[in-house]
Length: 635
Image (tube, rainbow, N blue to C red):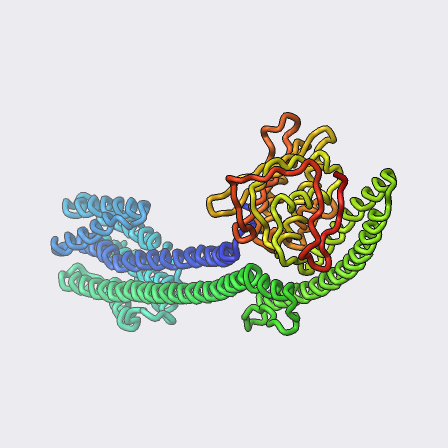
């Protein structure tokens, strides 16, 4: 059941189709899943990139507030700081954010809140405030760097690198604010400290922003840096000078903020484009994979359905030919029809594949079988002709021998010699029955006579054709006659059954007859012996062959007599069956039941039985045909 070779073609094709389709589906699912994960990752990174301005804004606001405090100027509005703080807080609370990045943002908020409170209370000196503000900006840079490190897109990374570059340049403004604060406190010693960060800014603007795509207005920033450098060199403590420094620093900070906003926008746009591209690619891949899988499945199902349908049609046609057309054609051949005049059973199929080749092979096999049947029929006809010729020649010689023996019996007066002649007569009669059996096997027509014969005489004539006839007990038979056309065949049939019964039983047992009249006017004759019997597993097969005789089923020499009985019974619709003799005192034995239909009988009278003579006798020759029975038995 579980062996592949025993599977039907449908299941084999299903296995062949499903395995690669499932494998392709698995690989396609993995690829589509990867695409979807990539889209989700890019989408999440794009959302985080949109949050970069909030981090930059928060860091810039805290830095400006620290710078204004160091310059002893009013702080930035509280609502500006609150807005920036809330934006970063919302970003840290997002569920799709990396937990490590969320922790960094939380720490950044705490650091900024602590710095803001210290600035508001004016707890530190200018230098210490600058140091704390610079540490805070370093923390902001680490957060921005952590957010950029999650990005795996070259254009976005370039924009992120520019963002960090602008951020680092902007930090120089804080150093300048710290130096200017020291300059306000001590103009003599603060000039050198104030001019150094301005020079660094000028150098950075000249070297680092020449090839950037989102660089700020370099000329304006350079002019403002030179202006602050001049103010620092000729610094005085007038409020007008401090206001000029403040205006320059705030303006430069706004330019840097604009450049960083442009960088973050570029990063977000690049990631959005990458997300859209990845989403389109995933949809395209999914559509392509589904289309290819659908086409492959449809093609496989079409091919499988074609093969299964073709195989099913071939099977149905082959079975129909094997069970109906070919047996009918062979039956016509057996009846004598020329095989060449019969159409060869063929299967329809126009394909040139292996199944089509198989159909052609089946057609060739059918043609060969029909040809062999024809040859077998011709051989059987030839054998039957030879058997008939030999049987007729033998029968003619036996007839001559019987005529000679009969003439010698009429002339002989010596009882001993007459007894020997009677023995020769009996042997010749048995030989004549053997020749008639060959005629039956050859299929030649039966002997006929015109006048009917009493049933009692028919039985005695049958017994006269067997050896050891003294063991046969006919008993009382119903009064009636057998029609002339069936006399010789009935005699032959009963003689064969009696001969089998005598041969199958021991010499000290008898073979008995029993009679009963059927309701339809026929008669049932039973011939019982007490012999060795027939094995139970063979008896049904023998009864079947007795009902439908076939020359191909002859099991000579043991069952040749039974086949002759079947042939003779089929001529006159006589029913013959064999059954065990259960009431036999010795052995099981066999009882042959012979049903003679009413069409073979005339004048049947069960009320007036006729007692059979102790010794059998031959049939009267009056009215008999050319081959009438002429045996004589001692009385």
